[in-house]
Picture 1: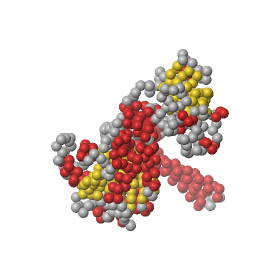
Picture 2 (picture 1 turned 135 degrees about the vertical axis):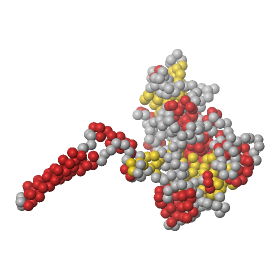
Picture 3 (picture 1 turned 90 degrees about the vertical axis):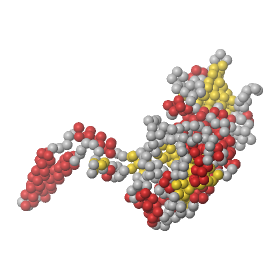
Picture 4 (picture 1 turned 180 degrees about the horizontal axis):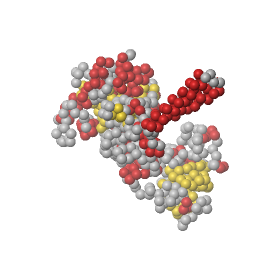
Length: 568
């Protein structure tokens, strides 16, 4: 497809680019050069002038020049935020096919150094247009004008083509890669916990139920309409036929009939019995959901019990921590909260490490090191995208990452935090501050943005506002829980030392109003070889909010799910 410019296999397989040389790095699995590998070099691509390349991408802007004799295209392939300027003569391809915003082009040409005084370091002079994915500009829903993020939520399938969402996607990718790098580097094993669960980790009951009962009920209702259930007389007739055929078999046996006659009669009897069984089974079919003692009978459901989408992989990943020591899970979680705030999603991703033989201080140390590692990773690997965020959304985004790296996180107890907030006079909080409350976002942000002006870890929370699995402290009033609070977002991480004492956690489950039976397996971890262990959960989208400075969590996940919306 790349014609005379097909790159040698050795070049295509290259994984690094020597920016000081004029060598080109070709993509290994598509016969092209990524735009990033041209213009993100220290010299901006100047050293590649004269090289023949094949590139593909989508037109950001296009304009005809020289009375229609040639056109300038700003081409982007998603590999970096910057565009490659492409020049196409009308003799190569009809220009009206190429210039509309959103058009996809795949072209061959030669890299040239542009005339002095232009902002580009290098441009591509097209010699051959290999493929065109045309766009009708009258119908394309993403015009060249600046579009709001709220507008783009109505076009989740097209919004990755915009500068902002593509940059967020690259930042999200970098943070995911950094997450695995951090935990693998520290000897953690990656575990995949189930999406469907029968355990409510948070005990809040705000879970999406997974059931086939409604589908089954619809099928039964449709079946009964098309083929009404048998009447009692139908069943009685079938029973009489079975009786009659049974007597026929008995007579043949007593008459010592030959084997063939008896076998034929037995086959008729068997068929009559099968027909009766089917009629009796169909007579039990009833419209609606199966009931028992006035409640839905989940023994008829797919899993023979109630099942839900997970709110956390923590409980399940603990089973591996209690055998393999250091593990983590990274996957989607779900909350059926009817919340329309800019901080809540119905489906979001969580990073949840679990560490055996670790106490609360170890847990805090790991959380702080992880957040610092992510911040450094973005500065080292996503600076161009972060600069785009600074330019368009939050002038302090890069400074915020540097702040995380430059200072130890402040660590204070919940009791100390409440006292500090109670003494605040220059601001009136919407939510009253008193010992025993769950700190609101305004309280968390005031601690980290105003009082300490850096990340803060608050620990030892009242047991009444925390989950049953958190270790009860000796004061019997607080649990060994901790939250990492950061500017812009508030709570980024929530974690705790887990309760490893069997008698204590059994009592805590009952105090939370939860049944013991679904957690019997969890109690087994304390019955057999219990171990001190700790862990935490980082809301992945919240980390992206913190890094980018974007205000709404719906804009940092590829396909946002929230009340009333589940597009694609």
